[in-house]
Amino acid sequence: MELPPADDGEQRQYVVWHGRGIGAGRHGSRLACAVPAILAGNSVIIKHSARTPLCADHFVDAFAAAGAPEGLITSLHCDHDVVNAVIRNPLTAFVSFTGSVPGGHAVYVLARTLVCG
Image 1 (spheres, rainbow, N blue to C red):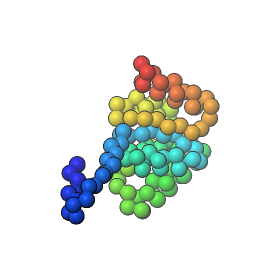
Image 2 (image 1 turned 180 degrees about the vertical axis):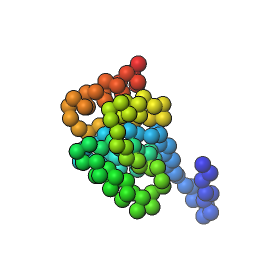
Image 3 (image 1 turned 180 degrees about the horizontal axis):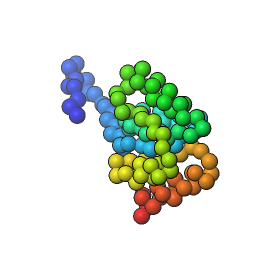
Image 4 (image 1 turned 135 degrees about the vertical axis):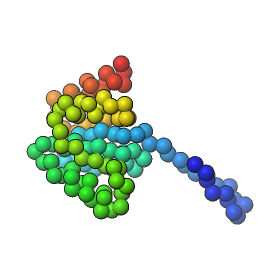
């Protein structure tokens, strides 16, 4: 990244942030948990609860309507096998979960084996 030169003789300081990559999240009603990941430069995949599947779709639509790049945030409607495949995918850089204790434990066990070996 090339930074603009200072044209007034003053020294400039810049903060450059490089996101980690794609984050997979399973969020109930707490879709706002995805916002910090996006602000940090990451794209996000949301697997919403099967009980309220349209919430995540509307969240994605709101980002699109605001001018967000296509693919910045994606909603998946899928079963547990697909969720596990997304977590295992090498492009998935981090996992966030909000939901039931048994679901959280299952995500934790899988993500832990990928990070900690």
